[in-house]
Length: 289
Length: 173
Image 1 (cartoon, each protein chain N blue to C red):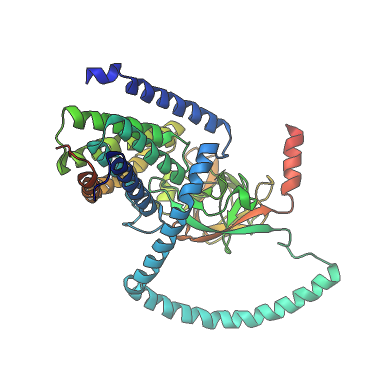
Image 2: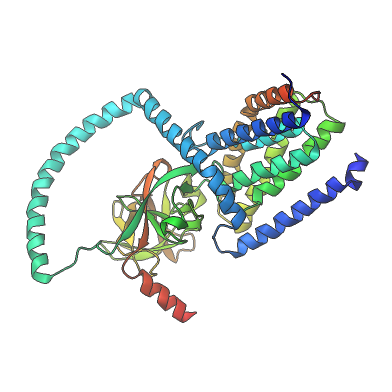
């Protein structure tokens, strides 16, 4: 044993540890961009992750037929009732749409989301140790995505890109305390900041903080992005209000938000690579710097 | 037909690497092996089990590879787990060479020790120092992951032992 500590092998191991420490310091300074060794390793393991995700999805789908039969039956009844309601709403919608089209022709108003440019992506990995729902998607810088790009589903915002490799990217969700998104309640126009907490993330909720203490926000209200920072487009749905309460400080209120998508179950997402206002916000921040 | 010693060594490490990639795939898949919201970190028992049968240099290299794979899937700073797992594996290899018998019970014990170290390492640098509220809840969840990891260590140890028995002329005991 004593010989080991005097041996060349021990010195080599110490040297490797020093190199790793240096590499970590360098990686920390890249601001979320994958280092070269990381990129090389990702090319090796990318097919493995894709294959594992495919097998995982297949098995989950097969088992869900048996495990979720009761839930599916009850959901089926509820959905049938909902279809009846929706059919009625569809009639109203068609009328509204026709009216809307007419108004658009008159005003020349552009479709709200025409400015979105996005890349579809699949979830290939979830870290067992992360309690804030972070996951890895199967596209990266080679597909034109970059750090801080918003990540959405068809229903609304679920997070942003926090790290980018050539063929993969890490998504930090709105359940994470690292996430800060300017948001607004659409009825009262009260604004606040969406950020996660350990307590709320356990139940799949996030928090809208910094609301005025006389806020009119109520349970069931809809929260959308404010779009003030230029990092997220305006009016992306974030979720619905579950509860409003006064902060311990007594100065501001906060709302518990149920995200519009069940983040732990999401399998397919879209990364918004560009949208109206993004470039100008960057230019402004660049100019400010 | 017999194969040479170098070829056996190469084949052994190829088998270990394939096992590592298989376990990495299982660990990082979105739904496989999931119980509730908890999944095991299979790379820890894989690295520790190989360290029980191999010398300190090989074990360190294998631990480093396992840790870097974990870093990649977890989106951590590259080397975050790599460094800790490498040191753990060198220690496990030295213990198994000089002090400890290699059996399933000790494999579980070593996995528990290495897992606890990785858990605390992650807890301190990913949660505690950032001052999150209710960090105790995070620790509970990490410990549940650790428990599941220890439970999953037995089959990983047996698979590793199978490879070692097949390729090593003398299996450590």
